[in-house]
Image (cartoon, rainbow, N blue to C red; front, top):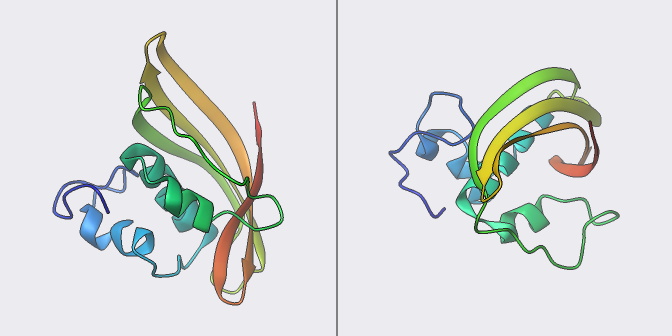
Length: 129
């Protein structure tokens, strides 16, 4: 984790990082697809490319990930969740992530697919709108 554990979690849950996404970023399995998606948003916010690669399914994971230091992630809104619970093997999470960069404010709208293997959730892929 690269942010203060007692500060608010970037995922917008209202909880502190140390008891929200922090443990997942540090290696604890996410209990649901939504929690994995929220932890990945936090990782983008914190610039944790290593976590993003670890939580990406090996079948679709890129060899490397270069995060843009000029992008500031501002807010996450979860719009829809399909399956992805603790006993499911797959799930879909639709979200909007608000960001700001040199060109101004933007919104990433994505429907992400997740799979659960050996008790761990992985990001598979997503379709942006």
